[in-house]
Picture 1 (cartoon, rainbow, N blue to C red):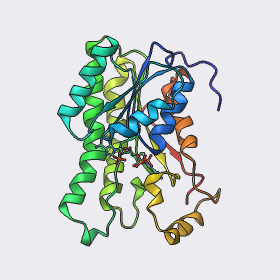
Picture 2: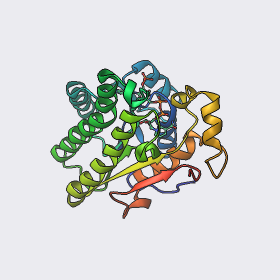
Picture 3: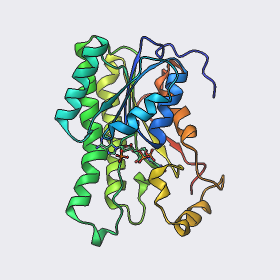
Picture 4: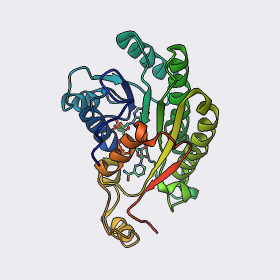
Length: 253
Ligand code: NAP
């Protein structure tokens, strides 16, 4: 998809992206920069975020260390960005996510909590801090938040905590879209299926083959195929899409 004009994405607009150091997040940064945006590439691993920034078109992009599950880290990160650019980011993409797969009866409290804290609470913290910064900066109009859910939100064997966290992201996105719509901020969720990234590289080949049989297009998705939809949701091309959950699965049954 070639986007000729993204009214809200130009060099004057700041993109806050957490989870930017890998997989889908890195690809989103690449495409947003290609479209002319200034990107704040944030990740818990600042080295990989810096590697992302080094590959981007344009000069003003920065890398930032943010732990999305830690309020202090998110608030400090946003303060630094507002200080540096004199305005808050108005497009927020949250690609930070983790898996700690295990059967329900074997799942530890720690693994359950880690996944909920990063995937669900992290999405909450990021939205809350970002929207407060937008309100303070008088920058809510035509803003867009894109949250990463998963098709696994409908349940998957061995993914109790992950599926619960991603189902929570869908509900929270819907609620946020209702609260923020009046401010001019759209909030949408993406539900990727099986995308070829470091996260899915850990899945055993046998399991992958089983899933391939269930995908109508008979292949894994590429990070770019998810990133293009995220960029569409960030742009004014999607100006009437709000509170939606969009599947990108190649037709997973
Ligand atoms: P990925 O390659 O593992 O990238 C996730 C990034 O998030 C990594 O750079 C990771 O850093 C970072 N991260 C993890 N915890 C963080 C935290 N607390 N604070 C800040 N950053 C953190 O994964 P991906 O496949 O691109 O997935 C991106 C998102 O899409 C995730 O939310 C995932 O659940 C979702 N998703 C992926 C698929 C898929 O098939 N790949 C399908 C559906 C949904 P480290 O490398 O240091 O851990």
